Structure formats: structure tokens, C-alpha cells
Figure 1: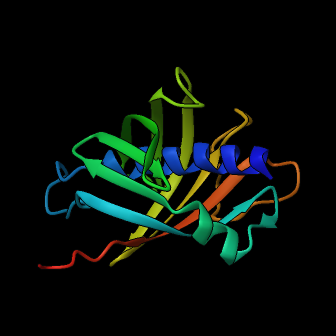
Figure 2: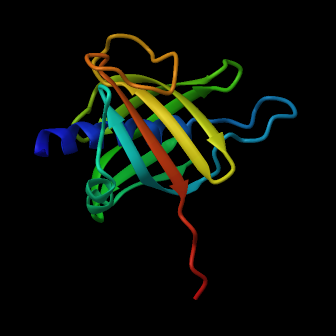
Length: 155
């Protein structure tokens, strides 16, 4: 289970990078993902869905500021890096570069889609090739992560 958590953490990091790279430089296009914090609400890897109670216990969050991302697990920094997103491609593609954590020095290829306060990303964690759909299959090396934008509590 710990191996799965580390692998999922790596995926979350990638997603973070993917989301952070979404740019508003395209004329008339809205920024794909706004800065802020995203909470992981679902995960699937190599065709196996992680139980909701396990996802909740991991308490994974992705914080985005510009092209920089930080992933935390139970409040502790687990991964940091940068990402570049191409919003001209369908689905949007992301190249995520980890600078700290289990994927340090690696570039992870992903696809990402944002719909309001929901985001999904599918990552190639094993270097086999960028995913082409938001799904995983046994042996694919792909990880799918579902996010919800964290609601800020005014105090």
C-alpha cells in the first residue's frame, strides 16, 4: 500500500504541474486552471481504482502559483516543480518537471481537463507515452486523478 501511495503521490505531483502550466496567453481563451488549491477526490492507476477512504486518508492537495506547483500529503510537502500546458491540443497536454520529491529530475507527460471547479488529469508515470484518454488499463503505467477546487473559508 505504501508503494501505491508513493506512486499516487507522484501522479498527484504531475497533475499539479499540469494544472499550473495552463496559460491564458491564447487570444480569447480563459486560463485553464486558476491559481489556488485543488483537493484529490479520486485516483486510479493501471486499471485499479483506489478506495475513497484511502484517498481521503492520504489528504493530497495541489497548490498552483503561476507555472509552479506544490503537492502536499497530510500537510507535508511531497513534491514541487513546474509544468507547461498546451491548451491548443485536445485534450490539453502537459509536460511536468519535478524538482523535488519522488520524481525529481523526471519529465512526466500528461493530459488534463478542467470543468468549473473539477479537474481530471491522466499521467504517464512509467515513460511509456502520453495518455490519449482519461482512463487507465492494467499495465499502462497511467494514473488518473480527479480533483475538486478547495473552497476557501472566509474568517
